[in-house]
Length: 266
Image 1 (cartoon, helix red, strand yellow):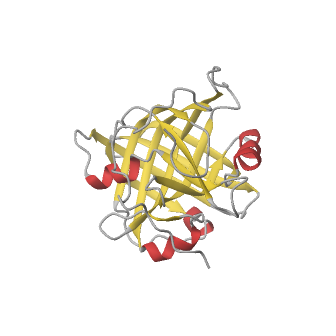
Image 2 (cartoon, rainbow, N blue to C red):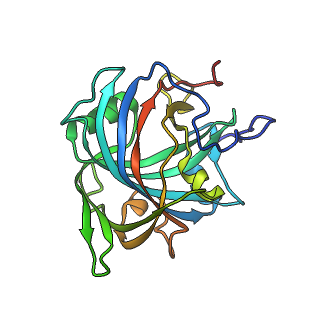
Image 3 (tube, rainbow, N blue to C red):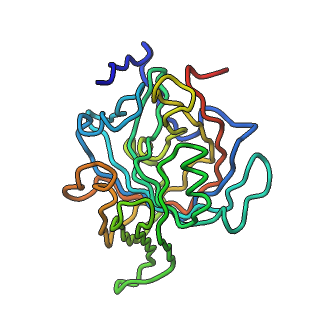
């Protein structure tokens, strides 16, 4: 049984649309393009046991969320070197949860990360202890439906390490840009780090890997098609009912820092 997590007396850090810390010496750079965020509300008790030690579900109005996020990873680069054009660019689809640690840092926890390039999958699993899996994937933009609206379509079919048969098919129709995102929309997208097991920490205690990027350009979107079992394959109940939020973003350029355990520095 996990020990209870005591959040700092000042409580979780505020949700801010801009990164609270600018990373002047990033470990990685990359672009996240053509993103679709699909979210369902869930009882925090359902996901608590799936988070790393030292974290608890982050909540808004008493609930937490399961996110299915599909996008194009583009030109991943090390340090300040130019991004890699082939191996650093690929479709990706993530199942993620929302977390907060004892120091009040809000983040995400990835339950699965489907990607179409084998080399980044192996590096992500071995070098970063992230749950990457190798899948056949595509992202198609600009198609039109019978209503004449532009659509973005994402497909994923898992290869290795499985479970075989895990898949997703999402089609969305982006709408107008959001001038003032709601509290929920900020909560789901303004996440300035990830929690993950930290190599060298005590047991599987959580480390925190920060990121920064410009403020999200967000559009509300209509979910045209959602056929998937990635959420269930990630150890979560299959989503019941309509999602509480569907968003689209053309993307941002991102910098990632180094993962570290313990309190924030600086």
